Length: 525
Image (tube, rainbow, N blue to C red; front, side):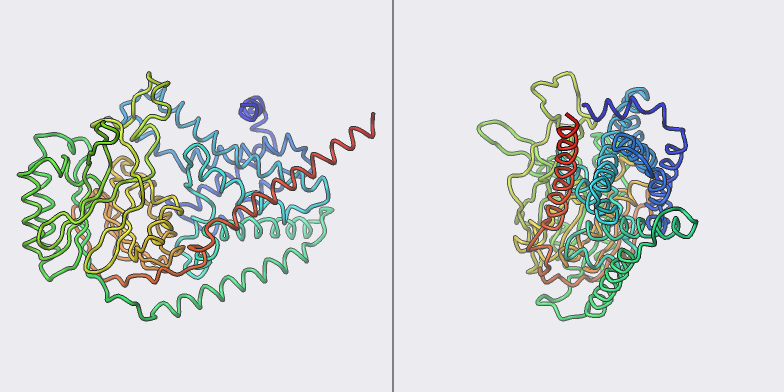
């Protein structure tokens, strides 16, 4: 609360020289993400911010960093207002307030990063070390704090640069973020040195950056060249179905028959040449599959007709402690039409699928009005198709790398992302969502297939290459062969250990700065 108060009290300085430079950095950061996705801008985006930090106090550094963050996230997350107003039915005044609250929350982590960088310089530690490390540390904190929101980290902007992102199987997206921030610091110092400012040339940090980039690209190209290695499993023929069911009528009883007819028709067309696995998106059937015997039998007959495994998204329910519990789930049907397993969503959307502290915040309704509050699944359950184990991630939870690791550690050799991005409308959000999902494949060296209600449906190989994408809001399907992964990567073993190290180093810098300030105050006394 103190941090928020400080940020709001300093908004009056937003449009001074420092504020304008911070805004410029925020704009460049936003432009590096899809869409428009000018990913190269991420490598220079922080230069105006670093200029704004020159000669600043930690308090000013916090304000400048927050100004940058507010600008970046206000532009990146503009689509939240589509979700809140069109589908959440919130008034614009409430929507904008909630949207800005999240923007300011995320901006705090930018402000904390720049503050630590200034504190470090105050005790003789250069920004070439403190800023990249602190940036990673606070990105990591926001990925889990208060449920977490691991969206639009700097490294995600590079999802198309395959040789660069291969290091995600060593330390996740955080390694790419660290390189980007370090490159910005080096370029900033070089430009300022050339311009005649009293800043020495960044020889040591430039050599460090060069060595890291060479090692990163060498590793990346090596991984890409070895991508044809033999797998223990034969390729899996898949069909991904995109029904393009309008969100406005998706849960309407009058539209139920038409929805099922659409998926049956598309599935027959997609599987006419034979497939091993058919995937329908999140909540593809707008009813409880386990209860609607007549409609469920139509779908079971489809599995028998195609001779394929059929994975479909559906709400589910079960008794827990004597109470009926609702779940956002995926059911697997065998070629014989039998239900062979169910996977439940583990990480729910706050205020979308449940209300945090619902017993206290009784006045708050869910943004997504549905059958009731959902509960998270109890554990990562793999499903099986044609002898291959699958890890199913439902919509929002694909942005959390720890969940993908859980599934692969449990034996999954193909990741399946089912989603309903209709909530986002025609915005940048579906593209941003897909760009984040691609990192789950690289981190775990496990291919990812994605079926979306309104798009984007796509196949992602274990190197993060996205192929055969559908458009947005079009009815269709995608078919292809995928080679199951090996389930081997350093990131699967060590997880977020590198990010934890960055967090400890950041805490160490802050502690040293505090001790120095405390000693200085004692000397004055």
